[in-house]
Length: 606
View 1 (cartoon, rainbow, N blue to C red):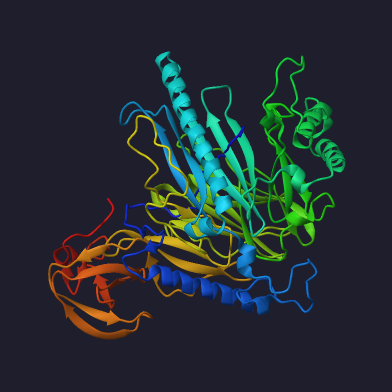
View 2 (view 1 turned 60 degrees about the vertical axis):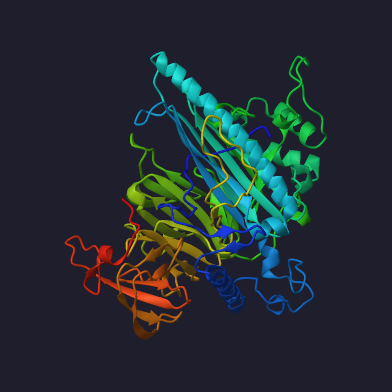
């Protein structure tokens, strides 16, 4: 593969493991286990609740957990979907993301020769078994990308080090991201991008499309999706000059000759003097698919000068050019990850509109102050005092209800989440969650984040102890029946805990969860007798009990204010109610005694 990836955004659509907490594990049979013993069943219960909600709102979402709920009055609905087609079939595989943070430096505290990060995508455990062909193909792709990233990291760092010795000081950068554009029972389509700087006149941004048949794992090529070669070429010859101007291109006719001879006829072009055979991958037409259509794109220097930038052409699924087999089922909810400065073509009120996320230039400390959501020529500015990372999801509840969820992360893990309703005039939905209210956001379906899962074959870095055998993966949000929002707490220890939120028809978020569930439960051990309330699973108090020293408490959930529930070894739930005599408001007492005198070890960050 010629190109890999990335953009100018750092992925924040992942659930961070900030404090090294323990995580569920996988046994020799590939089964997930957890100290609390209830996380898997809780997730299954939530998934059932998700399906019930879909069924109840079938007027808005054409999906459900029961085949009878999906049956149309005719044998097939208007889009040709067979009677009884289930939500699980439409949904397709669930994906996980792993991020490796890149840093090359001679000594601690010195300015690095290179910094950045690289994302990798894999199927979760259940999906890897169900879609084995896709899992194997994606794993091989990620392994190849990983190898290239490590080679580039070493090369860029050596160049920076050499130039620094010659008096030319700069820090190389390498940022590699993936944006999941479409995930369903037919297609997995991912847009990859790589942003790099290695001391040249300007940085480089390269995009690449990864498109797979979900059921076989075979790569989907442009000629599979658009088989009429001549009509497709005429479409590009018309749309490209219309959008960018004829003068923007090197030689559009010759460039298209080269691309079409390779992508459709398998003929590898030669250099102008016919003496050099060109890499066959060089002239593969790049594209990705989303819920609205197909976007064909050309990187800088492919068919036009650097100044023109990334060149894109959109083809809606309604076009006769598109093979019917690759059109998605309509009017189902979806989420599509957005790349910065790259147009999304979204159907709103029956018309296709260009949607993009734009930011102001970063200051010397790599912080931004403004985000613009643009719908055609309309702009909506979201102002944050200061943020360093941005992540955005395009969310559709139905064909007429579409939103952008914009996540900004600030220093010290403070974050803001904005929801923008798309329409002729984009508008903000409610007030943003802000001031460190939460730490991250992700999808909830098939949520599995655990230590030791090998999503793809690992390659150990040369001259480094670190390998990829032990990693934390986070779910890639692609289905929007619910979203999971994590919040950081300092109640009895430092940890992340989450609630699951549904999106109302107006785009606002609402949670039916009474408690935040602690993501990676720590077990703490008492060194004195503690009087605790005993509560049931619903949080109702059933009694009080004096629990002796050496009792083990597996931290389970919190109300986020002053209560922490922990599971005992016999399965019962003990509740601690904390109070404070600390001038900074730190909750440090249980029954008037210091928590540090009551427990052998507590786990606080900092």
